[in-house]
Length: 612
Ligand SMILES: Nc1nc2c(ncn2[C@@H]2O[C@H](COP(=O)(O)OP(=O)(O)OP(=O)(O)O)[C@@H](O)[C@H]2O)c(=O)[nH]1
Ligand SMILES: [Mg+2]
Image (tube, rainbow, N blue to C red; front, side, top):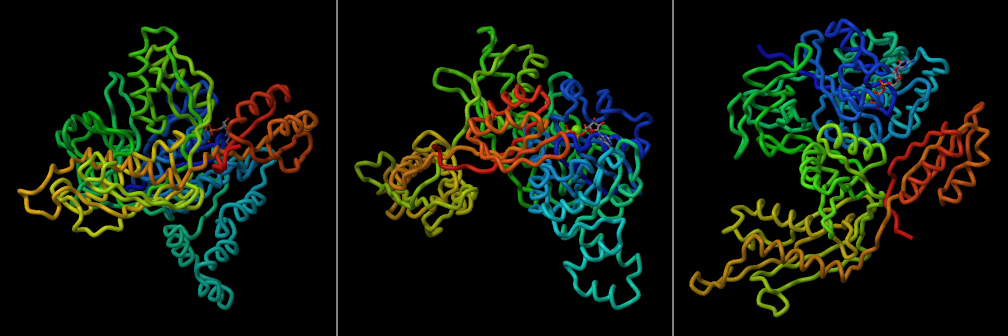
């Protein structure tokens, strides 16, 4: 029998109460008899020892409960910005989301970032204003903040007028009917609310406390009525996405896959070195061993050898992907004992499978380095190496990762048989600067007949390979940094003997020839265009005891941070502004010293800017 599934992400700024809410939903659904607490390290989703000790979520985790004939897979995500990559991977597998906002703190640094991602991907989303039991909770002020900073179409469900006015933003006829007539029947209003929520054009808001359970009944009803549970096409072509990888107790790899279409069975082959040896499906409270998993479900698969996070199973799933800014820091990792070097390499390789953005690389002097979002992530990797792999390692000083942007447009061509061209092919590439933050685009301006079909079969596959070669070549720009924010166009292409009779053909270029020639030509184009090195700039939000402001503000000035005027509420002051990533570490350290350890700082990447 087929059941409908709702894959539901819980997202929020750090500490807003995602894990507590997840626990509460499981409790209300009868999956657990005793309510665990984050502060005691007893929740269902913060299961890693490190999560329990620190009281923060580090990895996304899946749990499941039944709600009116629908299997709801809840994905609890971390809120700390150092673990934003976990959120990024989860975004691609959701049918819906709950964005949690604290009723005391309101919209926080990470909230708009998450909301923008949900909006861009058009994920149907409910807002949950949590912690209404706490002193200082002010739900209507929070709704105002949401309206100003997140979306004008927030619909607080406890106010019919506000719901109607949010719905009317997208449907004027509705407002007319409401104002002219005797109001709308509640049933019609609910249907319209569900329809607009599914289109992500309106965002219903609920209020309550994950801690006390207040308001949970309404939220649960909202999840059941307003979010779209799906019944996928299990007879369709296989299509799924790997969004999480973990190691089982015996060190074996477990891949979490969301299936969008089709069915997988135990013993299915999903490619070379990839035979499913066992699988579990989320449902009935947790992951249950099964023989098959179908469209809509989340399954754990064993036996997929070299699988990596983000991999596609079968056909590429529908929908766009969202990428947050990549890590802006890097650090060299070295073992304390020299003989641990191979073990360190193995351990980091495994951690990279679970988090490719750490981008493990071996430097000039055989040093291993990784990319990082921040200090907490660094501490977590260090602790994981020691605990799970028995490798004591230390991180050298953290440095920033810059990018390069082309300054002007330029084109370069290497013609077949020219003296400067060691490869039996012709390639021309044009590089044009794009707006900051646009990323890399690739186009081909050549005729499809020019493609070397002896190698790539179709024009599409040829273009895909050329794009890969270009992207690879862009990894290292003129100053050694990744080149970004540019459009690269393939303007000329040819290979030996493309036109002549077979007997007259010279050596045919190999795939490796095309790759190397792409690198050569791209470099020439970049040299002509010139590049500028850009460094990461972060927004900071600092909270300090008001009596320390006199020391904090001059310190910010010394760090070249650009603070806005502080705002003071009672004994607490907050300051926002910008700081170069290169000075983030000092900012965090100095703040601790200047505020008796009470100061808190949040940093969110904002943009790259020409380095000074
Ligand atoms: N008073 C009150 N406290 C809450 C509520 N929800 C969560 N908390 C507390 O807030 C703190 C953070 O809760 P978590 O559930 O860990 O928050 P989180 O969003 O999962 O945090 P991260 O996963 O680290 O981003 C804990 O001390 C909780 O006990 C609530 O509704 N009321
Ligand atoms: Mg949590």
